[in-house]
Length: 368
Image (cartoon, rainbow, N blue to C red; front, side, top):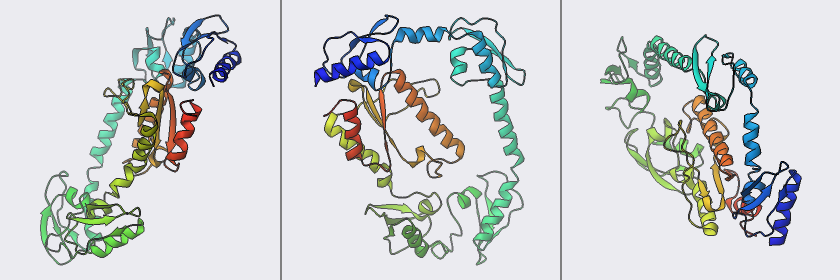
């Protein structure tokens, strides 16, 4: 096995125009010596070279130095702006930039290439969002009227102040009461005198549970906010309010994390305790991002990916922007793993951990 792996190391080096100088192989985590086509010498483990596809660090530095002021100007043009500096020294030294609105500022090439741009435009954009929200403040009146009509009642107030201000409502039976639009719209509240008789009762709870492949096990319904018992199609049982199930769209709390927990169970039986990464702290995420499964001693990590990592799902993302942020976090983790020579693999929601995880470990040479 050792001779075969050493042969693989030498073959990889030859394919990249270099040479594996080491004469022995211990395992995929022990550093070996390598030489590139330019005769640079360095050490790295086979895992980094084979699976993370790293190569000569000296050549990488030289390649970074090949960037010119022309490259910076072209990058700024793609953003609709200009690079006003006349010389480029390195990625860290500040250059002068101008956005399409004429704002000027200084920032390093490193920051700009990471995707940062004009802060003033970003701030102005946030102000425009706030202004639009202010202009749309009249809309809650319309929303309140629609909700009241849908429930067979009437919204009696003539003005809206804010989400926490009490307003007057009337139900289909003529009962009148005061409560906030937030409680009516977001918490599913309605006439307290009619609680239990409002159509959102036990029969509707059973219909919703059936539509999700489960059951509502309770035999009595009090109101939207009192917990009742549910069961999913996997037989898990739990208590949750009807409001949580219908309006918040929640469902089985055990199924949500089951796949991830199963992946952890499978791999810990093979490799032992999972560690927490310490290299995922960046300015945008000062507390650090997380990896579902991480083994620094093997240079290996796994992300367990649910549907929310490939499509916008309202349960996980309140709006499309949240979904884009999710994709951005996934991309950042991928890039940071590459920079730190961590082989990152994925187990998707529709894959069997008992099959996929051993396959990943065999590819890395961690099991036979």
